[in-house]
Image 1 (cartoon, rainbow, N blue to C red):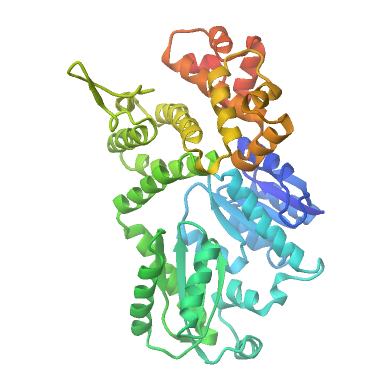
Image 2: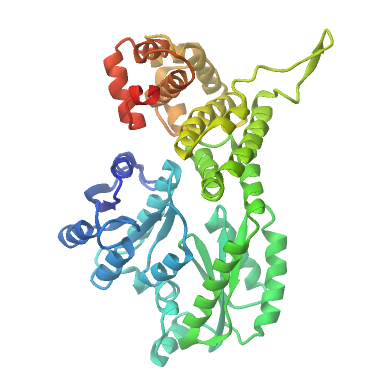
Length: 492
């Protein structure tokens, strides 16, 4: 068994990570090889637990009280060089990434972290643990040792000579490229490396969700940049990407090239047209909603609105009205499928009016509104866009939507309506929605209850009955557990 320490100052995050950790199953064996070493909410507690438990993996929030996450890692890195560290933070910052890379940080996650991202990151970390004897370090691999540590710091001549020999590097000189991609980093970086290898001797690695490429050749930096940019523009059309180029340096000074590449990457990201990033997020939302797990689409949605609302609240509301108008038309066809009945325009039923967004007074009101109404769109899209869902699952989702308010709605009842066994339906929920039947039903009921409490003058008791709960006390406890507030707070 491998041990995992979770460090975050927010209790809901600790609970979420612990829950996902307990429900993880590796792709190699299908079992869960992890045990929880402990949870910490401050830097001092994290240091204490690391020294006491010596975990194999640490999920570390950067912004924690006391000693921050990076300082904790700097403190323990020399003693535990093989410990896999996965950083998380609310916003990506390149200055933090620059400090984290020489520490051998395995991944850099931007919160909120979806279950899919958490599981895939954990699975990649598990593969690395499996590939090494327990008593050795990842730095026994010379390529990893160079790309994840020594290339970021000054090297001695002897160390560089050893790398040239062990990695068969043809030149004493090199130039670096850092590439950041919006998705599927491993796949796209492998394709980029394949293209580079047609012309140059190249080794690469993916770290902190970015590709680092080392070209071992005495070449003109300007010519290399021009040709490589042209190649990237032709190859990476479907994805969002930024890149940074370093200068040409001898091996012992390659850290200068890495820092220059990281600085250029940071500058590009800061100076990129915000509307261009927003446009690409909107395209992703419209293409993927209903076709990927809800956690993934909600992560894309959050990545879209968080930067907007951090700049100008009024402008952001206008942008969100436009976005929800597009999504409503995509999913419900309320504007594009208009017909004339006795001379009047009649469209499909619109479940809500995006103009409601303009009445929201603050960020908290936006969060509450968006959570309810975006969930509604996701659910509708899941049911309608069934190209990737088996027909029985589509039938089951439609049955749940129509009958969730019934007090007694069982898995067996839904399975019978879908024409399959309960065991088969449970497997479909896990494989295609990455959740269970009961969690899906509960999420739907609580979402609808919150909508009713916000939009109508009904009591908590009436809201509980309206969504299928006959015990208002149980409903209140469940609502508090899921939403973090009491239903009476929604009414306030």
